[in-house]
Length: 209
Figure 1 (cartoon, helix red, strand yellow):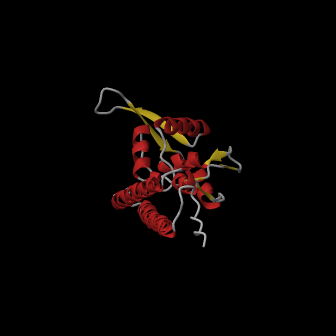
Figure 2 (cartoon, rainbow, N blue to C red):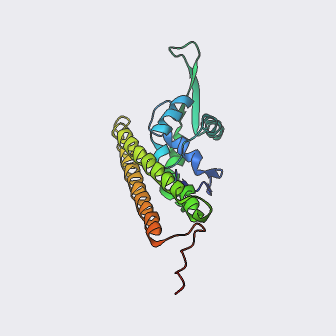
Figure 3 (cartoon, rainbow, N blue to C red):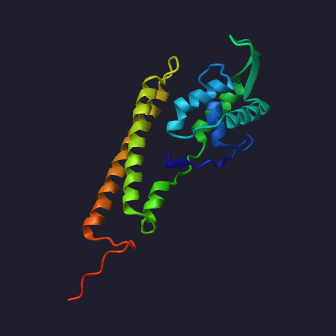
């Protein structure tokens, strides 16, 4: 989605780790043993709305890294299927590292990389009607994301943990505000039409007297 968080490494006593590594470790900090598949599903249910939607390969590479560091342990467990599942759990050292990161790591800045706004900035190279279509499409997509965030937020509490729901409420408001911004830009484009924008993307010159 439009906003992408900076993934700069954190400095400290531990090995310098990117924030995405802490995000995976954080998924295990709620006290459950989870498989890589479970982690992917929960990431898509929660943190994808405000931070990151990891691939399976990213999940497993981070789990291997965290296990090597001693922040995660794993075991093979029988499942209802024929194949065994590897379950991962956060260690006491992992909890300590997670607490330290959550309390002391600098936030850094959010990086706004909005492909749609870049297209509008280059509007002199495309059809204004195409831009309007893209804006309407984007508005509809973010409204759908807002609704999903609301639905997921209502089911985000794991056990007695309350904060995931708060994060999903923020996500709902974010996507709703993105829809408002899209509506505002649509109004701006329509105003350009009324003002007589030319094919070159410049305002039409006034007629000679």
